[in-house]
Picture 1 (cartoon, helix red, strand yellow):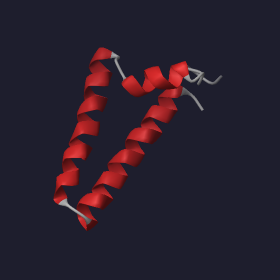
Picture 2 (tube, one colour):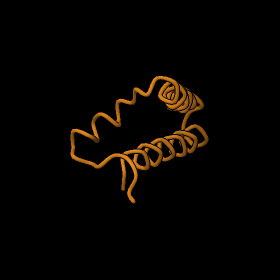
Picture 3 (cartoon, one colour):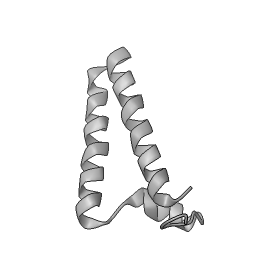
Picture 4 (cartoon, helix red, strand yellow):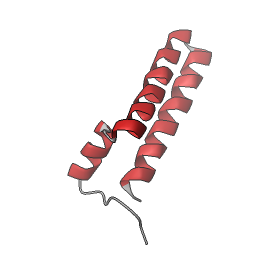
Length: 66
């Protein structure tokens, strides 16, 4: 799996988990959902993604899997 796919998987998982926590625990978990969404938006424009940097240092391959 490539870095791009892992970043999308992490973001999607965090969003779904925080939405579930907002439903069952506290509505304040929606702030975490907003944080993840804002980070995805800024990464789309700037190309800076902390998770991608960490995954690259861990040796996960980047780019196309072809």
